[in-house]
Image (cartoon, rainbow, N blue to C red; front, side, top):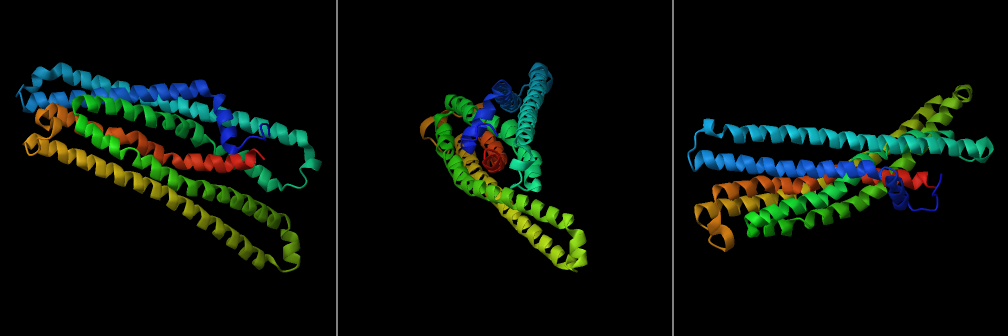
Length: 324
């Protein structure tokens, strides 16, 4: 294919420039979703504070409740637009790449492709191109949102309570660090998995083509065993890849849970008056509850990035074969 001199990462970046407008829309809508989430949590904390501390009847807060409902609806619409734009970006990249790959194979012709197995070529056109979908529709936009949204939330928390913001800031770098360490292994396993499935497809196709010959020489049972062995090897590789993906999520959830627990303990003891250090004396139900509601949202973009991190590994594994 074109740009064959590029590395897999460089090739993927080049493909991303073709849909940069759609990717920018996904990021922009994601920022809107994040800002609406902050507004939603702020309204919720303010309503709870008015109801419990000031004792205002619920019927007098009808407008704040309506505003909260409006924010929820707007957030849902922004999320729908974000997912739609991301899916459209993935579809455009895959359609263009599949057309370019087919044109490239047609230009090479049967003679120049005689040294490549048809099953491997079919795997490139179908499976390896499809493996790029998650990278463009989910991972790339989330990679930017995982930087922008936590910074926005951190600024809001810093305005409310600088000590709680410090707790979040100290925990944030640990999550990408361990994600990167785990992702190195996932990238290698995905590359090996694509090679294994290509070999398996070629192995199976050869046996199907030669089934008459195998029956004549009474070798069908051995061929079935060979196909079973190759399929079991692919199963084991797939399970190793899934274990790496689950390990990445478990590491992120552990550090995020610890950080949220520390913030919750600080706010709880601060409101009870057991902590007088720093801004703890100035904590109110509104500010404490607002910070506590924002703490999980601070880690949510990183959680989502972790869920889509295997899309990056799969895309790099597929790109490694497509650029050759």
